[in-house]
Image: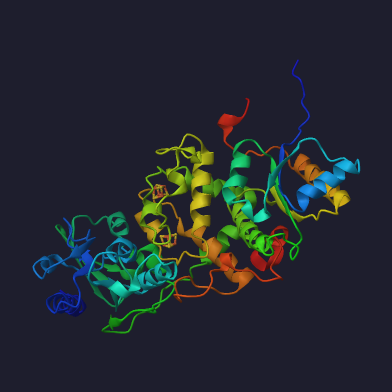
Length: 327
Length: 146
Ligand code: SF4
Ligand code: SF4
């Protein structure tokens, strides 16, 4: 157990004991070391299963929509990117902020079990991080890996290590900035021809099995009734019959969160087909930045989002392709 | 012998009730022609058009979709078309990012007094789409006849 994990559990314990919080939302030990899952803890005994390790990639803020409606206060542990999601939900009046004790915690990037498996290591029993290296122990021995090679995509291109709008923080060391630029891959796609881009997206989206995980996990996707649940939406409930349905689903999903997507990266993380959904959202983020000025969703809990705002001199839709967007 | 069919594009034009639809009317009463394959759908304001409408039009076989509204600043509801402008700017560039030809989508501002402009805009758009050819990238092949 790391010092950080200790501190977090300690804080959770005294929040519950002092009655300051009626419950704590955090990560619970899963069947394996690498699959902790989001959970609610109501008592000190339950906290025995609390974990905070390299596989706690899950963003807990969406759970607060429900939990903040329960009586009593809820304490929640949020990594930097998760705090942006909470802030955005507060801005949209989805979470009752008065019922939340938000505790920002240190994060230096979370690990991707799939990438570790690709390296031929399975049955992982522990992963301890020391700077740029991770020692991965498994039933079959130990191996040292370069951390950058096994980070989740979202952490490779993490937008910020700021903890926004939290009530307290638990940070023991200096947090490292992300190793790469998050718009790099979007730019690569932009430089392709239309036909190449079409081929790229067709090959990616045709893998989609319409499990809806990307929609369900997204903190920005929080409508009670979703357009895709409407049988008339023209999107078959399960696997798609036609490639149009894949396009429709993905275009609308990305459009509905544009201007509100905090780039938390959960969609790409949960996709069982490993479709790079972040490249869809980031295109919107990049275009918004270029056309309407730099904007980071979730940074502030008030103000207008770019698509619910305008200026008289905005770029014309027919010109957007040359308005410096296609640089 | 196989019959060689000339490609006649299907065009869907969303026109706002207050300016562009009236502009189309004026074009009609002024006997200015615009191609018969432009199917006009009247909407209360250009900002009534959500991205789903546009995708649905493509799904059902449209080869091009054009959205017409009052000139910015002249919206009957004061600011509706400013929102349209942002939304469509984002949507069109996004569609292009997914590989959809950028000529297939268009926004034009046409006032109630611009009958001639309405016919001009439609003629131009139909010409562009005819040159571009059939929409195959963003369509539901099941709704095609063959
Ligand atoms: S679209 Fe993806 S990256 Fe954006 S907020 Fe939703 S889950 Fe996070
Ligand atoms: S999570 Fe992946 S497979 Fe599931 S619906 Fe989203 S894109 Fe498709």
